[in-house]
Length: 547
Image 1 (cartoon, rainbow, N blue to C red):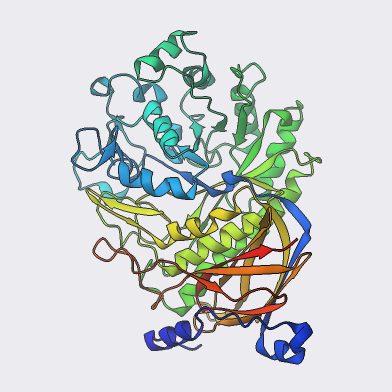
Image 2 (cartoon, one colour):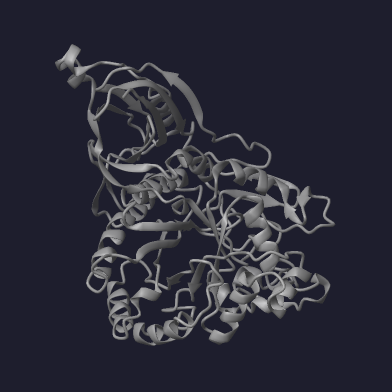
């Protein structure tokens, strides 16, 4: 296989810049065909469904530097903050409309007692964090990553959600607390002002009006760290927590079950079968699915060509996971009332590039991670009829984060820029796209032949605007692509492109704008037209429709 050099990459990227020929096959015939090696057809009249804004959700766990040194800096901190919450995160999240944020875990959730995180902060108990025994933390002393101060609790989390206009999604402790603790947490959050003692406690914490929390995850990874249950055992526990007797306080409660790790179809099949024995499927709104992407060498920055493609191939499995799980869910839920919730996903690398030793599972982010984000979000968009929510792991300083922060330093990762580019899809109508491009071939670490799509993407329509997002996975080759929009004439076109001069480039505190998107107006007005997608890139085409 060809070994990529910096010169190769820079040459191919610059050659593959924003180029729109505006050639119409009707006018140019064979000329248009010769220009293109790939093809995209956007079928405006073939709707898939509305893209739920919740698909663009996020995940916050009390893990490493996500909460402490990430979101929460404290009210007395010299770091600019809003009531103790890092101002920079609030200001960066608002423009990308985060929709929903999951908290407090993750595995941490099934060791967390919500009552520890309410009341005056100076009186809140310090507790041992679920992640204390990770080797990376052993020599670091009594840091919050090991012993949680509980300064960031329910009130602080909901306040954070309100600051960024996101809905809270609370993960319930099913492994180590009884169902009664869940009912009381729900009462604390949602009972009317002054109606209960717990409502008064909420008010004492500064929030008189109810939080109106809609989304509740009943346990987390109950097949593993959340209890190591069998599907039948978890179904019995789920019934106790999500029984019809739970008061809703006027909120349309949406319970989310702890679904499988990846392709474990039997976990889904056996759980649905057990829950359906008592006709309890109507007590579930969403079914969780977790899938993390990795490459064999595990490095975030020091990867070779093989690791580039291995990671993208791992991310590409999301499509088949969704369709396989959906089919099994339909065996019992034939009307498909229950939707998929991919509440943990992202690229997970070795912890060799974290910006601080306390940031457990922290890692840097390159254009390779941006492509993982783009192709995954495109997958969700194409399955808008199946996926109702998704939450990338995690928001800051952990796994495929959108932000890196350390004391007063802060930056946006390439993954953040993908979410910013894709914002236009939220709430739009997903339409079918047909993509044809040369297949990418490579040999994996065991010298086996592998292949991957040439182009991946999705399209959506809102009013008279079409948004087409596309990832080109090839390391060195741009894709000259003939694009046909069927169903309406096209007008002006704007292109936003995220790529890098070198695929190992990443944003640092000293150089935070190394990998950022560029936007340009390009010639439009005809369909079909030919557009060149640069190598190793994520692109958004905003196309005006003339109806």
